[in-house]
Image 1: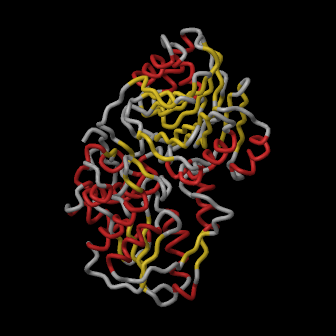
Image 2: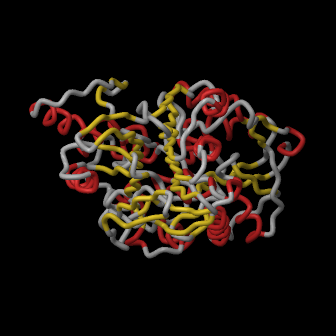
Image 3: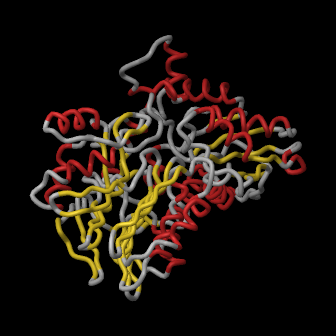
Length: 466
């Protein structure tokens, strides 16, 4: 999932743009880019897979001048894209996943359009969206046409001489929020970018809504709908703890997840509670609050050198980061019964090989794994994450138990069913933990505090409409 930030100011905006974009560094690991509009467009894109945003762009931003700009931390595509269209020149940044991008690209080529940007997967989604927008009657109509033809999700910021067009995808899967401070307006994926820059939240953009921000404020270009299906995983893992979506803070939700996990754990006794750094920490704090057991840190993350192990595109890189970033503290681990709270279990390899294994090797007496969401069953259709069901440890368990891949896994989705229990037993043996208990989907929804119909739960139930 990419992170977007845009700003329009009555004075030079580049410093706020630089730091506002940097506050999205947890959202992607491949590319980052900024575009500033002053007397003309100035754009920079860098690969950040082996370095930090700040070190790559620090010298660039000091030489960029303008009163409006957009930035992106991208999970895959190189962006921003610059396009000189019939509406004049603009720069575009996007977040989401276009499932039918190959088909849409072929249709554009048939009409005589060209696509010049090349990525690992062939088509640069942001360039594709830019070309689709250029077919509209105006920019607003072009953005609406994008929403009509894409499968998946796409939120975007479009920078031109009029300001920044901010558009949230029609499902509301990815969030966008507008903030204001004296003389400046900004739009962000993560509200955690606002406090230290002095912005106050003014509006959570609705699904399908298009808003233009400029020096005079914000103006609605297309009304949205209130019936969103925002990504639940933002609160569980992806989002930054200080961020707020739909008015609900991430850290508070994670603490509530931990409390709900603890309420179902009346049959075990432990010596300490821990969270896999960093995203499991708040879940563990909630568990400790509810259980009365002390929160301690048997594993610490070497934050300066390693980021998230979930976001890199290759398994080899994910495993390397997971191995190197967590350092065990034997004096805390040895002889203790430990609850390990984790945001989720995707493939299971990192938890098994680089968390649980380190605890056992350091002398843990018991290791109880408590993921804060249900078993992941379906690859996400709306952002770049797990792309194959075969990667998911829950699906591996089902295949092992059934001797084949199943099309209908409904019995395994019911946490009260015997098949669900057998699946959990298989995963627990595979992970080599003393016990394993997942969060129920009802408890996860309760922790967020929105009606289930407003939360995308596709990766757990395989249906975004339920």
